[in-house]
Each structure stands twice: as structure tokens, then as C-alpha cells.
Amino acid sequence: MKQKKTRVDDLIKVENFIDYNQTLKVEDKTFKKLMFIYSIAIRELETKIGILKDEFKIFYNYDLIDHVNTRIKSAESIIHKMKTRKIQLTYKNMIEDINDIAGIRIVCPLKKDIFSIKNLIEKIPGINVLKEKDYVTHPKKSGYSSYHLIVEVPITLSRQNIYVKAEIQIRTIAMDFWASLEHKVKYKPEEEIGKKASKEWINCAKMINKLDNKMMLLN
Figure: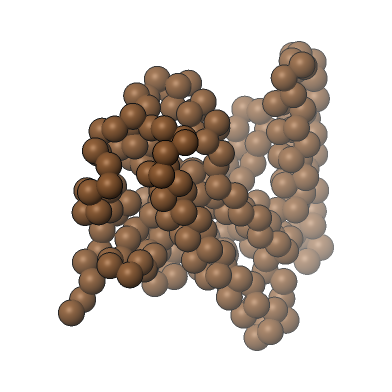
């Protein structure tokens, strides 16, 4: 008998371990169960990306992917994001509106690799792409550059198959260097980036973009 495919929000209703509109509480078992489900999704996604990485290295002698980082958004970050966006703190809203609780970052050598990886991800059986944002072709005003995908990842539990949302970021090594430093400076609580400093960060991002383009020509 085929197991029913469902979403994380359906799991809540099927298992009946909470009221769908119950207030989000970090300390309760429901939150821990949901974070466990998101962690499984990340493991599944990391395995699939790892297979792509190894395939290109072994079959084509090409390092399509340099490295992969994963993370599960902290409870504090989830709540902060919901409050900032004025979203009521319920499990239903958390699951439906916060798409980046589970996140994976794929770092590759060249800019053209970003689009190759994106196309390969779209062809992975079971992975459904829900949204995508191309900050590579159209960087943010801050200078930030990366390709974002919101996907649904199929995971298998003992009683059912579930689709779980996750965010995938794809960027070059140079883009990742800029973004990592910018994030550290931007989120220092004791400091505020002035207009002059912001302009310099944008200039650095433009230099990174030129470097990426030159590296692509060299290769």
C-alpha cells in the first residue's frame, strides 16, 4: 500500500499532538518534534547534493561544488523573524510563512556553476521548487549576490511520507567571502553601518563580481 504524501502542517493534524493554531512555544515537545523533522529534511538534501558533488568529481574530474554548509534556524531567529513581519506566533504560521527554517548553502568555484547546480537540483526526483530568486543576475542594493531556491524535500517517517520546506542558497567562493564578512559586520549589536561604510561594501561587492567574471573567462 502506498504511503500518503503530505506536508509538515498535515503531520500536525494527522498525529494530533497539538492544536494547529496553538501558540508557538520553544520549550514544548511539539517544537522539538518539528525541528527534528526539519533536520531530517536537511540531511536528505545534503545527501542528494553530496552525490552530485561526488559524481562530477569522479565522472567528470570537475569540482562543481566546493563545499556545503547546513543549518537549522534557531528558535530565537524564528520568533524574531515572525515578530518583525508581524506574523502571529502559531505553529501554522511558522510552517506556512517561514520558509528558511531548514537551510543549505552550496558554494561553488565559478559563477556559471551556480546555474548548472540550480538546473541539476530542479531535476532531482521528488524535489519540488516552490520559489526562486536570482540575486546573481540582479544583486540586492546592498551588493549581496546569491541564487535562492525554496524547495520541498520528501522525507519518510514510519507512518507517512512528508514534504518539508527548505531554503537553498547557491553562490561562488568569492560571493560567500563577501556575504560572510558583511553579515558579521551588519549584525554586530554594538555597531551601526554608516552610509560611507555601506557604500564601500557595495563597491567591494562590485569588485567581487568583476573577479568572478574574470575567473570564469580564465577557466
